[in-house]
Amino acid sequence: MNRESDSKRWYGKVIGLVAGFLLLRADPLLGAVIGLLLGHAADAGWFSGPREDAYSVLGVAHDASDSEIDLARRRLIAQCHPDRAADEVSRKTAERRTREINAAYARIRKGRH
Image (cartoon, rainbow, N blue to C red; front, side):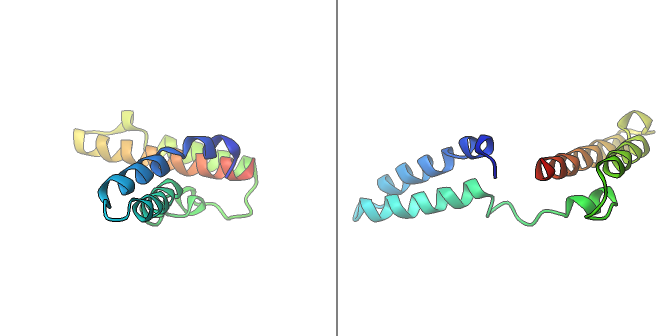
């Protein structure tokens, strides 16, 4: 993780620390430590569930070049663009798929730089 994303991931620790301190009145120090650990786990994404592999979302190999990744993203976005949807249900599906593609592309770009 880079410094920028580390600085954004502090609020779970603070909320966990305060909540643990206040909720476990019999031993506030133990409550604060437990809350801090749970807050850290939440900040680290331990509770968000497994993510689909970004490369498989784009349909490229892990050793694909940057240009292959860009091309795959553009191809998939063109195929499922929400403006091409016939009805509202397919538009919602296309919007969800577009968000998945863009998120996968962002994870790959972040990991490579």
